[in-house]
Structures are given as C-alpha cells and as structure tokens.
Amino acid sequence: MERFMEEIKKLMPAGLWQTVLSIVIMALLAFILVKAVNKLFKILLKKGKIDPTPAVLGRRIIKGIIIVLAVCGIMLQFAPMKQFVVSVLASSGIAVVVLGFAAQEAMGNLVSGVFISLFKPFSIGDRIKLQDRMIDGVVEDISMRHTIIRTFENNRVVVPNSVMNGAVIENVNYGENKVCNFVEVGIGYRSDVDRAIAIIQEEAQAHPNFCDNRSEEEIAAGAAPVTVRVMELGDFSIKLRASVWSRNAADGFVLKSDLLLAVKKRFDKEGIEIPFPYVNVMEHSSEK
Image (cartoon, one colour):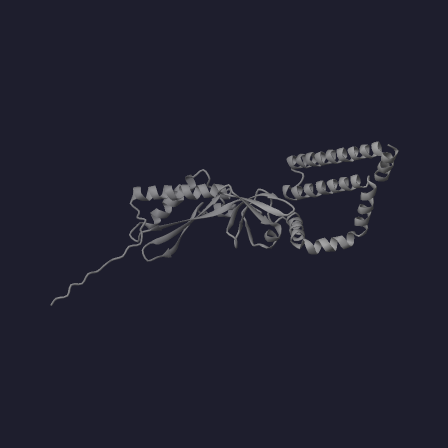
C-alpha cells in the first residue's frame, strides 16, 4: 500500500484527491466557458451587434483556445506530462516551423479563412458564383478550413478557404441586393415592334416581383419603368431585350420565368410572331 502511494505521489505531486479535484474543476470551467462563448455570440448575432461571418470563425478560434488551455492544464497535473508540456512550450518556435512545413495547406486555409472574415468579400447567406469552377449557390458556413456552399439543388459544395480567397467570385448580395434581369425575346420581321415592346413593358410592370429602379430625375423626365431595346436584326428575327429590376436574385428568377410565359401568351393572343429558324428550299426544273 505504501509503495502504491509512493507511485501515486510520483505520478501526481499534488496528491490523488487534489489532482482529481483540479482536473474536474478545469474540465468543468472549460465546459462552462465554451457554453458561455456560444451563448454570448448567439445574443450578439440576434441583436445584430456583430457580423455573422467573422463571428463564426472567431467563436471557433476562442473555443479552440479554451480547450487547448484546459488540456494543457490537465496534463500539468501529472509529473511525467508536466515535463513534456514544458518542453513543448519551450520549443514552441521550432514546433511552429515544423508544423508549418508539415501543414502548409492547412495553415493556408486557416489564414485565408481569417482574411475572408476580416475583408468579407462574401458573408454567410450571400449568393455567390465561382466563375472558373461553375459553382453557384448560397454560402452556408465558413469554418477555419473551408467554406460550405449550398447549391440550388440543395447539395453542399465544400471549398477550401485558400481556393475561395484566390478565386474570382461574383457576389449577388455584395453592396446592393437589387438585380437587373435581362429578358430576351425574338419577334418576326412582319410583327409590330412597338406593340411587342409595349406588351413586354405591361407584363413586366404587372408582376408582383417587379421593382421600379428609376431615379427621381428619370421619373421627372418621364423615363419608362422598363427599358426595352432592339438588340439585333438577326437572320430570321428581331431580338428585343428588356431590362427588368427585382429586389433580389431569387425574385428575379421567378420574375423572368413568369414574364416569358406571360409575353408568349400575349404575343399569341395579339398575333405577334415568335419565329424559329427555317430553311427555304428552292427547286429548279431543267428543260431538256
């Protein structure tokens, strides 16, 4: 029994019960701090005091620091581990260099995540498009290593932060949410162009998702709420393009789809042709 107690004393210099009590207190304190950090960030986000993008990354970093400190504190309660922890801390500079070479990609993603949180080229909830990778969706989460994008098919695309930091990104929600939607329709050369333009303008303004983006000066000057221009005199049709504004990209998608259907019905009703490519075949008869 005495030998057992001596071994315990060597392993735990502060004593068995004192060591157990210290471990329990540190583990409980770390648990309470993590819960408090989560609650604090939720309150701040709910009140709009902080931006959600840096808040997510900042919360994870703080929680990671708390957990690391708690683990180090628990390890220091044991004599063999105490020497190990002191050695690691003493050689932390060398360790950082070694880890840096061994985990360059992970460190690059971490630094890129910090840059994204600080400079905010996009935020959680923004609709973005990576032009060179054909990825289009809504930013769902930004972790210390990667960014999660929810596509419109409800799939999740996990992209490393280093890729996001260096990519050319189209952000629909950056600065202003309003979107100009181009609606293109071709009409036949024998159709009434003025009437076709008037129909497109009427149907666009009647849609509930339509947004009047005219300035006060444009309204005073009598500018039309919907601009329709002749874009091309093609081989078989006159191409018209309408610039129709909506409050956001989601409303714009619905507006564009509904407007194309409404215009098609009005054109059919009023005798305006939407032509399609056709070929004239001429047959020559030769006399013998």
